[in-house]
Image (cartoon, rainbow, N blue to C red):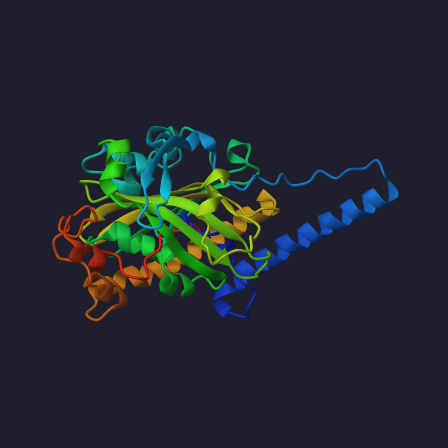
Length: 375
């Protein structure tokens, strides 16, 4: 908005950069294949009028209604109301696709990636990469998950970084303009449109099973021209913190009946990217270390799944490469993350967005904050 993206426009631009040679080669090859398929379809239809090429199924540009309730909460401005998800339905699905989400919800001392038994997966995943000693330790996918025509991607990584406000600062990698632009050249706009006026309203709907809500709201993303034309997203997103120190950042595309929430200054509608399902979960594994599992099913409207999967995967990897150094800077005097964390109160509970003290809210979320929109 979500990531989480946030948006489908996290697709990287085709610029000369030695660090991007492999992704560019992959993109060029896939785009060449797409162009070849298109030429065949045109040639067949020209000489055989009865031939109708099978087109990529373009998903409707709004969220799955099964994830949404008919309940609303107050937003923080303009007398707006925000739709509330069916937390049980949504988090049940997240637990099926993300073992770390399940650990965060159910375990007092979650074991992280090392404790995952892939044989216990509810769905059948295809392993794409497995490198236990590398930054990106594992990549899996499910093609055409839930018949949406695009793959569900799952990426795992292990990082070093402070525990203080980990859920918030890690979500900012994909949700704040300054950080997002450091690794995503195609992002144009990423901003929060609305936040919940009172997180206690969310607590009443979600109950006690899914941790403590730290953020809840609607994010908007618009991308630049890249390998596809500009796209936009509007995603309902949140951050949940758990007693174990785990955090889950989640997001899902808003339904079409919420289009009135689009930013008032963005009057021209772009093709819509759709985050069908997104979660990014951080599990503490030691003093200053943590595991991350990033799960995303993204539709970029018109791009077939076989093309979109590798591009989304490489984009998520790029985020993790940036995150590695950024998170470690939290341990360095004057480091970028260390300076960011200095804006938070020392007491984690005092800094909670649920506090009634107004001075803390300004410290925790500055003017650059924006709920994630998955890349």
